[in-house]
Image 1 (tube, rainbow, N blue to C red):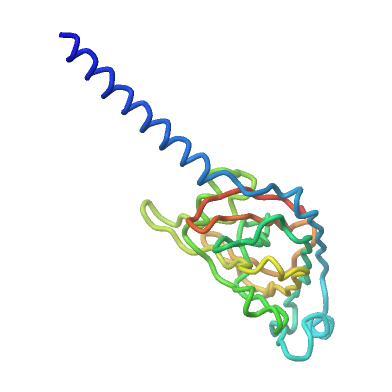
Image 2: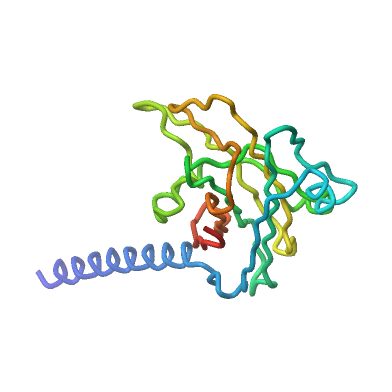
Amino acid sequence: MTWRWTRSVAVISAAVLTVVAVGAWRWWHNHPPYGPEALALTSSLSLVTYAEAQAALGEEAHAPFASGRDQLVLGRVSWQAPPEPLDGGYFAVFLIDKRTDRKPEVFGVPAPQERAVGVGSAGVENRIVERYSWLHGAGDVRVGENEWRSNGNRLYVSDEKASPLTFVALFPYVAEPDPELPVVSAPVALADLLLALAYLGPDGQVYWAQRLQG
C-alpha cells in the first residue's frame, strides 16, 4: 500500500513539474526581450508633393506615382540600437487610415533600405488585433460570414540597423468609393492617420505594439 501511494505521489509530482515547465517555457517564449521604451522611438508624418517624396527617397528609388488628386504621405520612424538583435523577429510599421481602418497598398522606401525593409502583409499579424483593440486596422478585413480579405500592406523591418526608416505611402483619389469595400483614398488629413510600430518574434509572438502618431 505504501509503495502504491509513493508511486502515485511521484507520478503527480512529475505531472506538476511538467505543467510548470511548460508554463515557464511559454512565458519565456512569449516574453519580450525589451519594451518600446528601450528604443526611444520618434516619428513624423507629412503630406508631400511627388518631387518632395522623390527627394526624400533618393535618386536610386522611385516614389509612388501620384497625379491629379492623389496624395502622398511621407513618414519617418527612428529608434536607437535595441539591447538585442531581432534574430528572426521583425518590426512591423503600420500606417492606418482611421476613417476606414484600412492600410495603403503602395509604399516607396529608399533603395539602401530595400533589403532590410519589405512591403506586404502576414496572417500572423491578426494576433496583434486580438491584443490591441486600438490597432484593429492592422489585421485582415472580414467581408463575409467566413471570408476575409487582405487589408493593404505594412512595412516589415528585418534589420534593427535600418533606422531611421523613411517611407512614402500613396493615397489615391477615388471618385466613387464603394461603401461596402472601403479603401484608403484621398483626400486625407494627417489627423486621419494612425502610425504604429509592433515587435513580433521569430515564431509570430506579438511582443508589443506602440502608438507613434494618431
